[in-house]
Amino acid sequence: MRSALAAFAALLAVAPAAVTVRAPRADLQLEVAQTAAQRERGLMNRSSLPRHTGMIFVFGGDAPVDFWMKDTLVPLDMVFIAGDGTVRRVFANVRVVPASLADDSIPRESASAKYVIELPAGEAARDGIAAGVKLDLSSVPAAQ
Image (cartoon, rainbow, N blue to C red; front, side, top):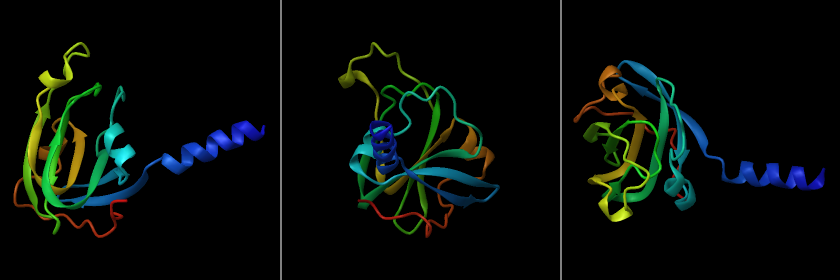
């Protein structure tokens, strides 16, 4: 029993927090990846992602960042956002890559951002998220 409780406590310690972010046409329920380990794992190995859900990656500052689809099983929209909440760039419908593809061959999506939101493919457009839109990210915790 003690080992089961310890395992559960360890899981809670690394489980991402969640926040609600209002997009122009929907409220998004986003897991928060604020630690290096959470950012590295991201949405890997998820077989589905419901509408209006995803993950927000939080970085320590506004700088160039690269994202890829390694071990990601569903196509995604990647939304790169400035520190003030302004959407800089949306990469729509980023495709899944074969598991056999070598790491150095996996395409990267890159832009300058303090935050990146990953959503199910097509969700950004459905929810009114486009370059220039400003999102209120005041409920998002800082990077750790």
